[in-house]
Length: 377
Image (cartoon, rainbow, N blue to C red; front, side, top):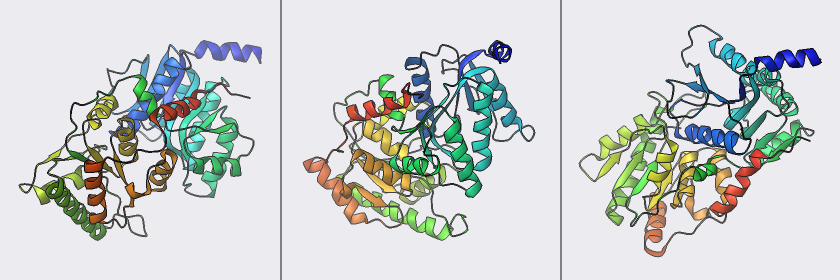
């Protein structure tokens, strides 16, 4: 065993390999990447960090090496082999944030990476569990939870799942990773906030998991009416944010459909995707309010201390609202929301002030640091 350990140590070029859904043109994943890199550097004191990144290399990231991943692989298994190589060359693997534990093959890939890294200080941070694709995925997740030295779970629902399927695992309730962005930047206090921003996403699907075109068109029409109502009642300019810049799966189609409906009727700006979450965070600090369907639109808005109206299309959005104690009057279902109710809440907030979330940003920072605990017992 001692000889194997020495041979393994010779292969290690990096203190950690940071991996997630990074580089896929999603501001939420960008925020998780920046936050994970911050934690590896400042909380774990890792000097040599490698990163798995889709798309083109990012020269602005201060890491020792970027392992290229591809959505269109050169050959089947290319990304898997890249992950194996990266894990073999790293002392630890850090799975950084998001909904990354739901399919059997992907979870088993993560289990293999843990074994190749060899060190017993790898971790998953700020992650959520499920929904699982099938029973096999749930069983694979139970094995992962028992094999990963530390798992920081960002919500109570994930903790309940972990306790049910892997009661002996070292899985703790922590928080989303994004608050640590505030250690990397200072959100400027605007002299005067201006405008209302919307972070929308396409979500209407039918019973077969396919896009329900009719439902999506109806929802776009409803949102366009909401924007018209807001503008005529408040006089505030409207901005459509692009949190996901993917050409097919991103926010572009819904944003441009709404823009085409309202073009010429009111001041409307569509902001393009920005791969720097620190810049996105600063931008969100300038608005009077944000209406968000995107989870990290709500999270970054909260960190910028901008009032958020959350239109929830997924349980993770509802869970976030509960975590921070967002007032019920600021939460709506994406399936059915009232234009008059939302516009009234915005109007009341602009005139009388918005009700702040119960959880302070300072307390959120304390909770997110639990992801970097040294509890390996």
